Image (cartoon, rainbow, N blue to C red; front, side, top):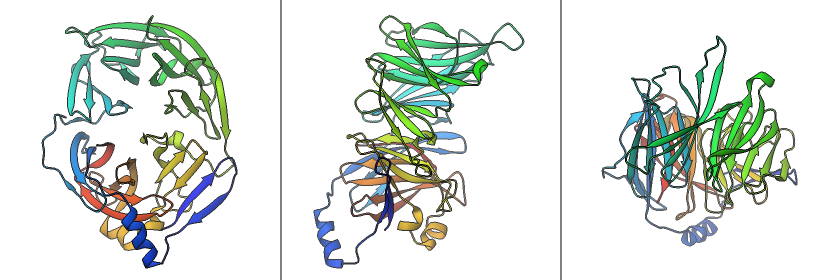
Length: 380
């Protein structure tokens, strides 16, 4: 199997392939871990989000018939993932909303009705983050003027029997929120200034805005790094911003046509050492798929690209698995396997999960068909 590794500092490109030496492959297989693991997988089908449990080791994977506390809900407008927890916002028919907080590891679900005080069906949720039992929701509502729009970040404390909330006015549209170091970092855009981006910082201790950092234009997404700092992604570079000093501590620029494009990804996962697993947009360059699995190693600023054409035959791609597009990428640390969720080409409501051994000895392991398209995943 071939993968592509891109070095963004050294700006070099090379390919890795599987060895044809059977004896060598056998030695590698004997050294591989083989540990029982459980995958909790959120899947989407027909505008409904549900959960599937899978049991696996390094060589086999199958459905777990056990029942989960997660309740099937309509496909979410906004989600926020932090470790083993995911918060999900859904609008309700009475113009209120509901936030579901699901703990993958402990299989617990908390549901909270929100925005029932407004009764405003023009409410638009733009951003969501959480820490413990406190949610941070960026939203907008129409103002009194014909073209006036009001922006807020709402703090919702659900640790008490009757949740309490505080609204804080924002002067820019919130796009995304990340919680780190007792602060909420809100990526925003100024509609009146050519959509210039800013990073608004909310101090959660005093529930006040603490900073407004000019980010310029074309910010794609913000991430929390494994050490709690903030990564700001642009098409041609990414910055690291200290979550304590709020200073830019590093800038990594990409060579043209070697951009990792993780800022464009809607689904991503961090492993324990800070590698980012994500679906990378391709613009159909070098592949017939709009998105392919990729891994970005922040330690050495390297992207490893897993082209389906390099580890699946044409028969497997088109007929056996019917790969349509990549929907999510994750990692099984126990068995050192990359987990690739995909949507089937023949039925957009169905998908599957491929498992692949990563470099330096890449290989396709197995596949399982699913009644839904993988959305988010937790390995236990």
